[in-house]
Structures are given as structure tokens and as C-alpha cells.
Length: 461
Image (cartoon, rainbow, N blue to C red; front, side):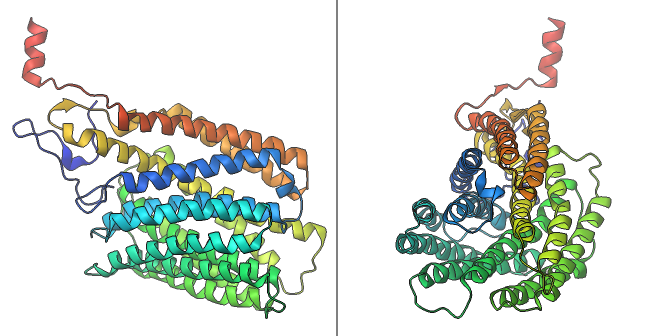
């Protein structure tokens, strides 16, 4: 079966040439070489699998109150090692394509990768042994990588002839990422100070929301305004609503971070601003999907949309936890664990996994088969992996998410452990499918191209 994406790369038997993808696909003349996003994606997936297995052996990380060295270490495996790494790699591919401009520097991206990998590994290990001085040192390496990332994408954004809501959202996410990094370095350094103007726990909560809402959520919101219409064959339906969602998310986060670190009773007000931003985003996503031309959505996009729906749960939990005068009890403290887990494992992770089923197959296809269009018969994108394995993986993931969430709320260590075992099983299926896709990088599967006239001659013979 012949690949149909990009559509502009249809066979031209008279003059077989390397195709240039049409605007609206994941690869154009502006896209970097596939090795740049690929090395980030592979590293991020290794971190996710490491963290999931780690949870099987240390379920107490979720079943007990969240502030201790092991929780902090494992949290950074997921946030820095997995989510941030994947998003960075995806942005190197998607920003040039979505905004129709070339990446400023692939060389800078490779230097960023080196600093990032070394820094994250050092930060996680030294959190585990609670050596805050070394956390600061390795955190500085992460910071160098983030600065290189921000410069690279910032210079790329500067080339855009006309800004839109996607560019504004990406620029906002870069700003919040840099602020998250500075807040993290401040938190590490303040451990050795005799005095800090902020409660250390409150500042850590503020730091977490800068990264979670400012970088993760903002990047999901802004980039999905390009990707969902692209994959569903639709368009943004209301530009004002899309802009309002990004602007309100920025305003709400600025106020929420300030009120969290100051332990202000106004936290709830700014949390509601953030929730309003996400409601507008959800309404726009619904409008985009209702106007789509592709009636049947693939499982990758379904997983992404299902993940977005869990913003409702995190919004409800945030409202409760920000309630003025809420007493800190064993149960409310455990709700913070549930809140963080549902956001990271329920919203961000499946959103990423869903989009990886769109991005990674295309990278493999474009790398291995784009030169063969018009020369050979090449597989379609859907032929690069197993849909049955994909569905089974998502089903197991949903089961694991529900089990671990309930067990965390009930402080049931055994429940967390077995839920995480199911989680590992779901990720194993995901890894199998990614392996099937990656195989095409090294062993392309092409067949001789049989033209219609040749087929008739063979049939007659």
C-alpha cells in the first residue's frame, strides 16, 4: 500500500524526485534532520520507562505525603527526564513546520541535548542522595541547555513574518520554562541559606506550577491549535477565543505563582482564571473537531483528546486545594499527590503518547521512504506499527491510571504497586510499537513499483 502522507508526495512516475511535503504536514523544507527530534524522543521514552519501573519498587512515593527526597527525585525523572525532553525534541520538529520558518541552528540543538542529558541525570541522582550542592551544579548544566533551547527557538520565532496564536503560545511557554529553571536554581540554592523570604514548600509548589502550567500546559494548548486541525482536517473556528485562552492562561499563572509563594488567600481567584482559560481552550477544541472533514479519528488523536478531558479533574482538585482556609490534614495532603499524579500521568503523558503516534511514524516514513516515492512501492504510515497493540496499550494505560489514582487517594501502597505494574505493561506495548516504527529507520521495507499497464500484461501472461 502506498503512503498517502504527505499527499503532495504522490508518485510521479515520469519524473521520480524527492518529494517536498505540502504545508500542513509534519515535514517541509523548513524541518530539521530527523536525528534532532529523534534523539530527544528516545531519551524521553527511556526516562518514562525508568520512572514507571521505579514506581513499582517504590510505591510509597505516591502512597505517602509527597515532600521527601525520593519523591522529588522521581518527580524530576518524569518532569525533566521524560516530559520536558520529549517536548523539546518535538518543538525542534514542529515549530519550524507550524510557523513555516527554518530552525535557527541544528548544531545548537545538539549541544543543548548534551547539556540536558548530563544535567538531568546528575540532578535526579543527587536529589535521591539529597546532595543539594551537586543538585545546583548539575542543575546549572540543565539551565545551560534550557538557555540554548530558548535562544534557538527564540531566534526561530524572530524569523516569522506574521505572528499568530501558536507563535504567541510557544513564546509564552519558553518564557515560563526559563522562569521555571530560575526558580529551581533558587530553590536549590536557598537550602544552604539561613534565611529565605518564602516558605520552601510553598516555593516548591510555585516552581511546580510554573513548569506544569507554564511550560507543559501552555505548549500543549498552543501547539494543538496547529496539530489538531492538521490531523482532523479542520481549522481554528474562533481566533479570538483561541487568543483569549492563551492570554488568560498567562495572566492566571502569573497571579497563581505569586499567590502560591506568598501563601495568599487569593490563590483561588487566579486558579479560576486558569480554569477559565482551559474552558475556552476546550470549547475551541470542540468547535475544531465538530467542523472536521475527517470523520473517523485515529487512536493517537483520540488518546490526545481523552487526555485533555482530564483537565476537568485537575481543575476541580486545584479549586479544592486552593480554597481559602483549607486545613492541612492527612487526606488533603494526599490530595496533593492525586492532583500531581492526575496532571502528569493523566493529562500530559497520554497527550504526549498520543501525539508520538503521529510524529514518530512520520519521522521514520520521511527518513526512509520519501526518496522512494515514484520509484518503489512503500508502506503507508499506518503500516509502520500495529493498531491492535496501540489500542491494547491505551486500554491498559487507562486501567492503570484509574487504579493508581484511587490507590494514591486511599494511601494503599499495594494498590499503587500493582497499578504501576499495569502501567509498565502498557508502556511495554507502546515500546513494542515504537520498536516496529524505529525498525524502518534501519531496515526500510520497499517493493518494486508495478504500473497499471505492467499489471495488465502480467495478468494476461
